[in-house]
Length: 388
Ligand code: KIV
Ligand code: ZN
Image (cartoon, rainbow, N blue to C red; front, side, top):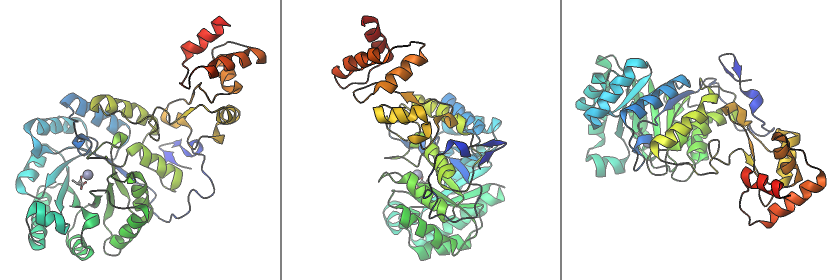
């Protein structure tokens, strides 16, 4: 059983006997770090205004997110002001900074108590982006950590492009620093679940610090890779609502949290019933509309059309639903279309208080099937009945 406070989510998941195979960890609580307001806002074309940022932060806070990355204060005065405003009301706000004094000062000025310090550590990034040697990068890291620490900040450190960083260099860095959490970004999304599992196990050989992971979705594997990292022993995941973020985006919070309940013997602080509402708000504020067939929050995620499926769902929703949508505070949809059967028509009509004989339903179905293969809305269905 899984609990948020006194609430259990276990009954909402209809998993099978193989669903949990391949998983061994003693990490019972997974921390959820949300970066919708930072990496999510780096989605091409997205920019949240102050009110939208505040509203999203508050929704995430109320939903039980452990750490909210509200932004990158060095980006602009407006960004800094917004983060300061959020910090006034919320106590789990983190801000991003590069490993330099100016960026760290902006985080301090924003009143954030948690700093997310990052610097690239892969050879390709150090050469072509930073123009620094390994020694110089190492020095920037230790100086920045010392400076942030001297200001009492809680430190999350990310070696950017970690999954393309030489493992010996990574080991040298991680075993030399003292921070609350080390986050491993798969910056350009080049991992797969097996390699991520291996990678996190390697990291565990030389650190006992909290391990966080940050996966990008360039191959559509961000959620799977995050889950693999958690299975290997990471205990924090950096995620975004709707999976928005740089390029193909980040691992989506609603997918990863659902997977934690479905596949792992762990729990989070997240109040699942809040996620759909947050997703809708982020869709409106970002203008990025999730694809209809996106897991969990897509319009079709809990819609059923095929006659065989609808028949099963009506008898017992567990026949065709891995997750009961009520866990997100939403209802399943029965959709009428080319593949519908009598059960769906009967179900929809009876829900509207309309009772028809089997012959009448047969007729209605015939008319509907002769209409092109588009989805039939309620209005059309009622019109068919009136004409009958
Ligand atoms: O993808 C990435 O490497 C990042 C870092 C800033 C953590 O977003
Ligand atoms: Zn990122």
